[in-house]
Image (cartoon, rainbow, N blue to C red; front, side):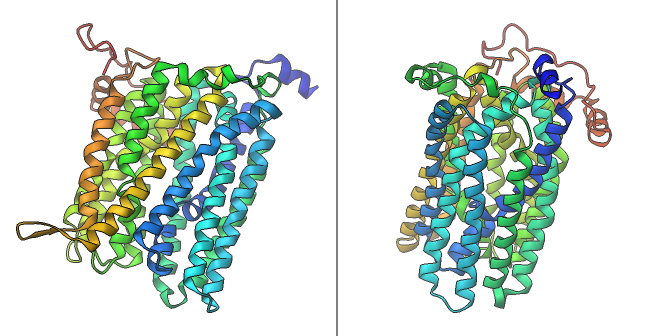
Length: 482
């Protein structure tokens, strides 16, 4: 009876089974963050490799680049979905493998704690991290296509905003606890790392068993793969331009991003203790929790493109690093976190939503596959180039008259410059939701007198913002609405 009801009723925001499905997605996301914090090239992993295991900047670049390069396997995911005509189980098995790789990192940490060689352990950590990314990439396209059909368009960005707020709340608590443990038990740092990665592997395993309980409403309508279908996204001019702008931004940003956390703890850099990473993280992610539901609702109300363009300017949060040292990190680091926490969620939550908006509903797997492949390739190139340049400048210091430049300063200036250029290109894309999807309309909505009341009502009472409808730009504006 239940199966007949699911077939008869259209899958939309009013379907009786949608609420339970969304709850499974929320629970999976809550467990995912324990794995994500530790098993992706975030601060904790990069500090483990470079600071504690003694990896070079180039080796760190290889780690981050290798993890992102595995994103090319999203195209393999497209092929697997087209051949198997199955999204949920493909995601389950590939993602389960990815989450289990965290146990290998835990084993490497315990090995060093027992007297094992760091130079070999760091290779295990890098291999396990790249292996985890391989499993993740093989299932990512299937997951995004699955979510695109499971979560109706009218509520998708808002749901992901609320999901992100929940995830980041857990993120703040766990990350601060992790950095506090690393700070307080520095003499037993590898035992602490081993315990943390055991938690990551366990939570990640629980995640996949929650997520698999959500249905796939398009399971019986997954098309077979043929070569022309596989290439459809590449024939889409708007999608190609979107990927080029996004790729330029990721390449630029990743030149410097992997080296920020090690710089904060480097005695020759900011010289801070690990707890300061936790403090900065609490500030940025605490703000993220507050603003990401609003960014999600603005995406549903105005459009994805404008939110992505404005959010990409979070790279300006790196400007304080140009002046950071051991005497001023205590206020420049929180200032950077404040800026990043406000703008970054708009970009990172918006870019995938914009991709779904641009994709054809019947070819979402192919669009997601090409998107995440390009995402991974561009994010892979930057860290390798950045690591090589970092090592080169350390060996051959750059000087202008009597002023010497730290390698990170050079990378930050270069990254910000090209990231801003990429965002200006993103702003010129044609959006399916024109004319309201423009930066001008977004900014006028953000700074309108009623927005603060709307935000407060949305956040505390869990309902959509009731601010006045956005006003389209005048006819004399540019055709693309930017």
